[in-house]
Image (cartoon, rainbow, N blue to C red):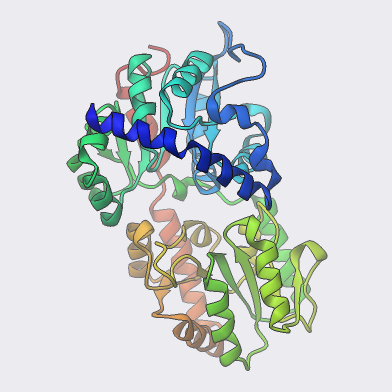
Length: 426
């Protein structure tokens, strides 16, 4: 209780900083100030969006990656319990936009309120879901305590927990152990994730695999990428996907040092609010570059800036080779599964601790290669392109096999949901 009170005091003291952060982010993304009341569980209509025929199942996916990963599970839940509506919550405008793109009007969308007891209680009274499904690592002490008060069982699915994150949680064991222990069930991505989660008090924990392997790239996006390949008439293309702050400068420095190929670099920052920042970086270097929003690159374009949303599968289908960002600097890496599902060979940097199991499996399967730094990345890109198609073709085939071999997490997770007490339709 002391830990909870100290945590709550810290939250209330941080409220002014939260408003400042929202206003700061709104300078680049005005959507951060839209639906502001939902972040405190204040709803305009004051009524629950449900009736006797449409009961709710709640799925929480914090941002874009989790929202897209949730797609096969949401569709499985809708097929299994067609009389229920799905409430999809998130924390970011880009995640909300991804939810609208993927699900349209098939789900109800709202922001998850901040982890304040009064806001949590209003959220549960307003929506009254029969049960909730939290994606990956979303553990909020007051949220889980509120669900327990309202007798709403919660599951953590597609759960992953790196050793670094586990060490952080252990420092606050008095606060987080009761939160983990309150979960009705946990579906972990791997045995290592399951062991770390169980050590923090989660039970029961089952290994169900990674839902992201079950996400099927949209055929229209793959066709779009293929149309770009046709338009480029055989020019080699390498993609720097989901790059994070600081990585673009490292990549461009190394790329300019190792210039000599006619390959096109497609640069797609992880966060859309950074598109303008990366555009300024390209302009300052005097490079021949063009935005995706301005049309296709021409023969003189050296860098194509991917400033679009929802087209990552098209970029992977377009590219001969992809580097997955977040891994050159100690940021933990990003998801490489979508690239593999699109049959795109992958390069990663040294820092992939947030996606350790998937990365190690991809490396072992021959679908990916690891590089030590930006210069090693450029040398590897040059080597793979100079070897013509042999090595890349082998990696491309391995990527498709790797993605196919790890599918099935959705059905295993759904089976776990059907087994736990308090499920829908009980």
